[in-house]
Length: 545
Figure 1 (cartoon, one colour):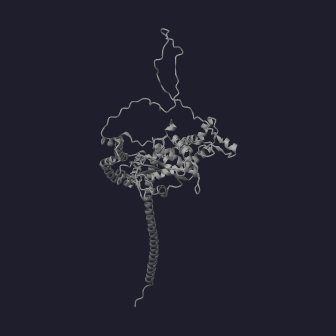
Figure 2 (figure 1 turned 120 degrees about the vertical axis):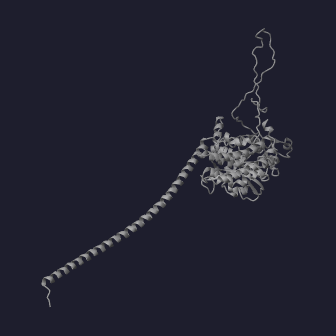
Figure 3 (figure 1 turned 180 degrees about the horizontal axis):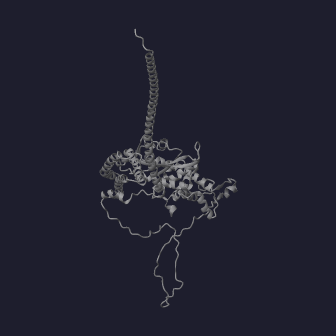
């Protein structure tokens, strides 16, 4: 048996130790690598999470960017819209207020009309009315000696000329002297000692110093000429008449209620008509139960159609602007009502609403004033409307009857309307809805059935301008007096404006009509017919002469 050398055994031990050391080193390195791998795995997981977070943040930012882009587009559109409104507002405030179309707008309409030679009217001074008082001033020679031979000259004619003489309001006093009478025979015999006093005519305001003439002058100046009461008081003061504005206001209120029965008769006459027109405007009443002083109330205006032979205009004060106001005033009415697009006029039993082409045209006028870019569509719409108005002008100039006007509209207006509607529907698909031209087209289409209704009856007008003209004196006067102090004052004003505008509709001088009413109404008996005082039933020549 051979024994291993000690040196060999040591060598193996060393080798084993070395290998063991290598194993431990590799194990340590492996552990380190595992730790490194674990660290990298954690870092990778962290990076993946960060990537996920960043992806979500990026998605969120993209969505925010999209929202901001849309908001930016909306803001740009809003700015453009506001600029258009500002332009329109400036145009209304500082530009021309006339709705007459520009020269180029009517070219298309004029193609469809025969050219007529313009009528030549001789120009010259109109003679002054014969009923004016004449003051004759004669201009004669101081000497009749002929400058040539010295003999006497004779008058051989004259050259007459007239000039106006205007004297500021003449103020005078009417002194009523009621004589008393007694019978001496009755006194002597003791039969009676009765004294009879001659009565004087009843006055419009009992116990007041306001005569019918004074009352007529005050209400005509305020409600016809829009002259505020404080200015009237100043004018009277220049004539050395000291009368307060409050006194004048009380006169107006009492005068307004004095004529109320006549205005109510006018209302009854209105609801018997074939067709009516209506409009409304705001008014401020300082003292009204349940309302603040700065809140709005409304003055409604109803009038006979323009073709009526006995037209009346009635103002109606209401605290609101609801359908109930119309229903209450027109209770029992069966017929057409021409008005703007305000919805309260719709869906009232017995009433057929008729649209107003002037309102529709005004929308396109506003679009032209507001739009800063392409204006062709607004001009095109106006050209269609102009052709409709050209036909109405033709009917008026030829003095067509309602039946003839109906035939003209059916033959010529209906084809224009058909083409116009087709153009509107096609254009409506190509425009921005919130633009001014978009609003104008939408208004026209929404109101279409009411707008075209006028062609079905020759008694109807193409627009409601006649009522707008009747409401204008009130809006002009409102600029001067701003508000009514009380409901009673507003109602009295409504009655007085009714008389003024009815006078205008019947071509009557309002001063003389008021004078007639203030003399006659106080002396009416209970069984007298108030209709005898309607404008077409009175003769005012005696006052004028």
